[in-house]
Length: 317
Image (cartoon, rainbow, N blue to C red; front, side, top):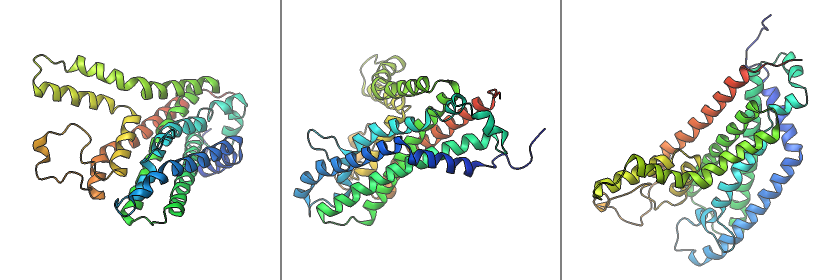
């Protein structure tokens, strides 16, 4: 017998319940500790190098995120490493955890459809990730203002917020992947290992594999400049199949306004360009707009895959 009501009935109920569990659980305490360590470490690494440039650099606020100091990495490097792990931690047991606790049939016996259950869990994980990332961003910005004493300009704040949104989209990709494996595998440990394995593949191996595939698909026969450019562009296109590459290039263009291109550029293409001059925010955003669209498309793709697989699973009492 078909239940009445919207198929999305109960989305906000599931989301509120999942967020309450995640925000009050041990995972969130660990994430809060990581946020504090990341913010303090980033400010400590950046402030010492930035103070010597006060009055010279018009983008001091952005340098808080990109400046490193041995032995600590830059804040963007730390965030690019920890965001996928946090997203995977929030999603690897989203579905199979209900099966293992034998609560799935009880939940679906309520006036809640599978659509609403899966969407509510995904939105809860994304909202929790947004809380963590926003807290880290505000800590870095606040500590930077305290130690530097220089308020950011409007364009700096806008670039920082776009960087925050891009990081959330980047985390949403790995959250969606973790939920796909949570649907496929009944054991949470297996889902977590599979998610981490895919992340390691794109982090460590895909860049090398893209170079090898570019030599296969676009080999150098005579060593002409056109062949070298074609192979380089092929390698860049293949490397951009990785969310890591897309996110890294987004960060590069948004937090470094002097970046004018994200690929090979010939000298003739820089005719009349003032090297070192910062680009307006609109032009920097134009550089990374395809990258942002790619990340959002990956988020939708992984959620749709998890949705289809979950709809085909049998749930027994």
